Image (cartoon, rainbow, N blue to C red; front, side, top):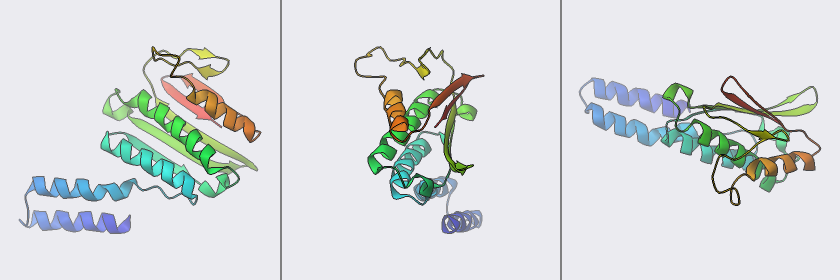
Length: 177
């Protein structure tokens, strides 16, 4: 991250001194910004899924903020981490995609609190959310092929003797695991 920051600064100085035009500077900055999307949490499975989602968010103008102690998830199977975080971030991305730029924000937090693992994923939303047994229902017309992500996340929480709590208040959706 430091090297990318320094490189961007050097390119800016070079451009300022007449070395290249603004469009070229913007193109170079876009190319090297991919390195800003890499997520390092200390757990490879979580790094893989969150880096993939971070790259997607970067390309689509979504601010994905991650503060995660991946080592605290080391007791979980990799496949469960992929499913859990993949579904959670995909749902958040879907919720913010059509929002104004200042609302295209997703936060992910993974930490230990008083001996427990706490996962929090939150994002803005602007549509009605219908809850059934504590789980939001799909908004997609084809209910036969959609709406299973939250159930999968709940099953993973149950598998590890955890809880899943969903809140939707004041246009902020919060998933606590």
